[in-house]
Length: 301
Image (cartoon, rainbow, N blue to C red):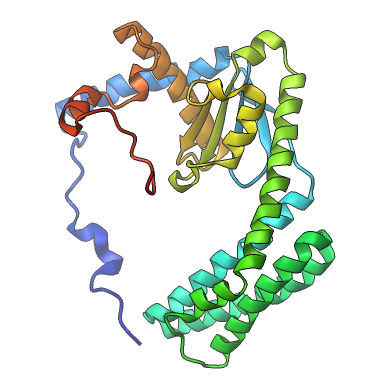
């Protein structure tokens, strides 16, 4: 077994102490200023008639009226099951990586056992729970992953190429499953956003903010954004249709959305530009040194 990197469990030990302890007078002032900002943020959604939040991957759209979650537009019950089975690839990659890395052979074997059991259940569920056109490619992918995990449980040595090669063998089926899931998710989300619009006062809908909550990796070419802008219009993206990066819960989403609204008002009051605070406060210096405006998206353009 290969040991993990020295000190990997004690990374915080070598990190510098946090600046601005309670004894620092500047830090105390900053806390005061930020507490006033926070108090304003707490109230701003309360005066907003209509907003909406969705957590990526759930298919659920939450109606927000005056800062309160008042209704959930839920997708068909099939959708979460489809998404859940798709995560089998993530789990298999995790178990393979743990075994390949070799830091803890006992933990890696336990991960392989968990994966194998879960894949067995997933294979049974795929046939019973999924539509036929999706069940067939999903079952092919799950079977290939199960074959891998069977080998790991039998004591076969993990190799660096076996997982990529296994997925290459079923790549057409995986791509087919992803395409079918994408269409199902898009349709369900569009239906939800249309229901939200149709149940709303037109003037409130025209000013409605929608926040899509998720990790940074989910921002680009996001299915929730695509479905929402099909109902709100492309012009809403980045204006009333916002990706709330690293808001991972509804509570996060409410807080992040409120912050966006507060900083919109702040930008207007201070700079006569309601979107100025939706950029870095030091953006002018950044643009000067970078040679122009830029957006650090993940992945090549």
